[in-house]
Amino acid sequence: MDSIELEASPRNILGKKVKTLRRAGLTPINVYGHGIASTALQVETRSLTRALAKAGKTTMLGLATPGQEPRSVLVRNIQLDPPSHSLLHVDFYQVKLTEKVKLEVPLHFVGQPATAVKSGVLIHLLTAIEVECLPQDMPHVVEVDLSKLEGFDKPIHVKDLTLPATVTVITNADEIVAKVAPPRVEEAIAEGAPAPTAASAPPPTEG
Image 1 (cartoon, helix red, strand yellow):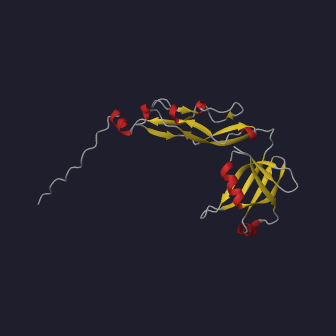
Image 2 (tube, helix red, strand yellow):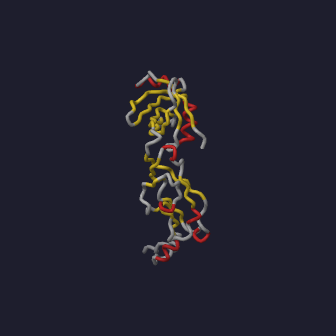
Image 3 (cartoon, rainbow, N blue to C red):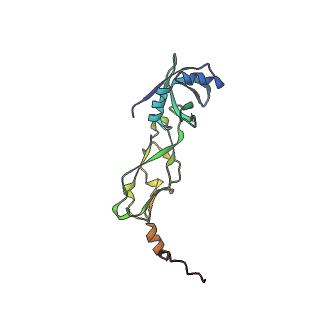
């Protein structure tokens, strides 16, 4: 993925007055980090929306401010307006490129289960895994190849996922990521459940 750059400027408007910023097409943001004082900034909303769509919460952005070296930041919190889903506020965490960070990385499912189990029900038990690595090594997503699902008793575990050697997985290696369950009808027959029957007419009432 290409480097994602974002331009910000100092912000003097705080509290409830930030509504005036949003009306002007600007979104208030805060940048903080370990040993770094929290800084109030503002960003052009359209540029911020595009950057967030590309970066998510796992890809670093280069946050440029006048007169300063660009900061390497990760998205930590996005506040949206409930009715409109428009941006209200974003918090960024300024990282140190020499210090590892822990993040939840979303899983991206690709492929299809093997023909032998296509009659079953595909179940996703995890949608993300926690990993640790240097900020610049953080994967945007982790791919899960569903074609490896070749049997009802052969789920994909966390330990089966492929990640770079620079990334350490924190999530339990034995946790199941995805599996295919047998068809429900076959399960019912195997358990001896009675087959469904047509509803019978009610008995006649005595006059």
